[in-house]
Each structure stands twice: as C-alpha cells, then as structure tokens.
Length: 388
Image (cartoon, rainbow, N blue to C red; front, side, top):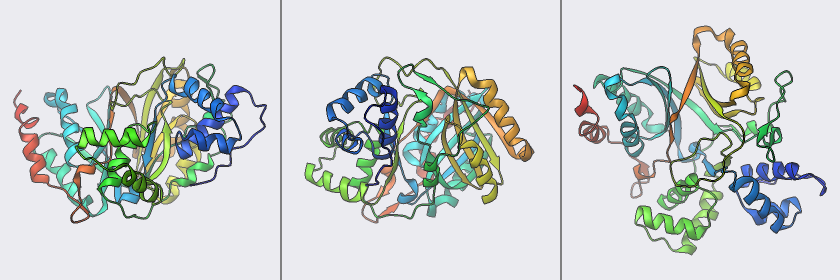
C-alpha cells in the first residue's frame, strides 16, 4: 500500500482537514482506520467528518480500475447515431457494454454525436475496430472515428481548491497552479495475473467502494449468483486486487454526475452547476500529449484523460466559470487547428459501466469477443427499427 505524503498540524481548520481526508481517499479509498492512523487523528473524528462532508454531500467513492493491468486498452470513438435510432441509444450502448467492452458513453449537444469509450483487450483491438465499422455498414452508426490510447486515468480531485464547508470552488484563472504530481501515475501498466473472482470484486468496487467485504460478498451473490467464501474473497482482495494493483486510484464524484448503479441520494454536492466538456486532439505525438497535459492538468476541473493516437480529456466546469474555461481552451488548442475539437456534453446522456467481466473466460484465461453474437442481439432490438 502506498504511503501518503499528507501531513499537517493538528490545529488545521475543518476544511483543511477535509482536504487531507479527500486526498487520502483518492489514494487508498474510504479506509477510515488507515486514514486516521496516517493523519494522526481520532478515528471517530475522521469518520464524523467523512459522513458529514462526503457521504451526506453525495460524493460517491468509486475505484478506478487500472485497465492496463487487466490487459485492456482504452479506445475512444466519435460516432454519429442516425435520428431514427436516437431513442434507442441507451439500449444500444447497454447491449454493447455487456457484449463488446463498451465502458462509457456521452451524448453531445446540439449534435447527434456520441463519444464512446471501450476498455478493449489489446489482442482484440483490431477485431473491435472491424466490428465498429460493421455497425456503420449496418446503419446503426452513420459515422465512426476511433482512436487507440496507450493509457487512461480518472484525475484525482484537486481538493485544495474546493471549500467543502461552503460547497464552492476557489480558483484563480489568471494564476493556475502547477501540474498535480499525481499526474505522473498516468503510465502504461504491465498486465497482471487475475481471475474471475478478482474481476467480480473489482466491478463491485467500481460501483461503490464505500462497502465492507461482507456487503460486497452479498452483492456478488445477488447479482452474479456466485457464493464466494468470505475468507477466499478477502484473500483475493488482498493478494490480487491490491497486491497486483488492479486498482489505480479512487475517484470522488465532485462533478455531480451520479452513477446508475444504485439509489443513493443525499442533500447535494454544493452550490455549483457544471457544464461538461470533452476535447479531442487527433494525431498527437508524445510531445503533443506532454504539452497538452502540462496546461490541462493545472485545472482542477479535469475529470479524466487518455492519450495515444489522440489526446482525449473530459472536464466539468462550474457554470459561473464557463467563459474563462472556454477562453482557456481556445487559446490552448489554437495551434492544433482542425485536429482539435471541443464537445459540449449532454449530462442527461452520460453513463459509465463496470469492467466487462462477463467476457472473461475462466477456463482459458482469456478475454472473448463474439461479433456475430453481438449483431444477433442488436438485430432483435436496434436494427429492427431501421424503417421507423
């Protein structure tokens, strides 16, 4: 388990202590006992602050899987969905999340463009691209543009710029901070060994990391019909999920986007409404990615990023800062000309999914992909509305 550099005097104000708490949650998850030990603070005080400032404010805590450790490559795709199929988009993408490695999608405004992300096995990447083109030939998509990425990460919250007592950001656009040192974690990971039990634990932590192993055991049994012995589950969690670093970090959902995994709802995140923005820069060299990151990682409103054949990033800017944000992006992206594109996200059409554990074949120890079977499922749903 990584050691934290977070430390400070015991007379810090409540918000400063909450910042410490959030920084450690981003690193090790909501382990109150370990956090209190590292901070040198009473466990009861840390737990109270966690409940009052995090849980009741509806900040969800979710594990960010290291897809590279699972042998999965991030593929970002810009697709267009014909108007006749627009009302079936969610059904389409949910089917793809079950059958062909789709892990997230976002609609954009005011166009019919969707930004789709896949966590695709490296050895099946070419087959995945052929399948996306086949969906275009079938008329499900009218346009497909895909990019392979070498790495992907969810950006840790820059908690030092958020006032948890007031629920507002404190950020000076004229003097952005230096790049967060945690950006160095965005490296290409080596593939690790794992099995189906590890994937089942991982996907439950992706849903909600604020649960005990007993609760995760019950969830696996309820959802997957698999009754795993508690000691076995704990061994896999300690030795594989943590030991093999299948989890990179933990995300704190400051952006107001709630997962669809459960009914959790509390009093709200704060006083901000957010505007979601994605940017895509094509044909990026390693140097291009470094230059972009050196400026974009300075913003505390960055949610995720990926780089490879293209650089892709997602932001959530407080509505009151939208003018400054777009001006910042305009100046930054101007050297890239038509290679750069900015998308305004439709927050009503944003969904993420867990790692595609169902596509792992335990017997062979390999990821699987059946394009013919996927098309068959789509033909019974989305394709049937071709002439609507």
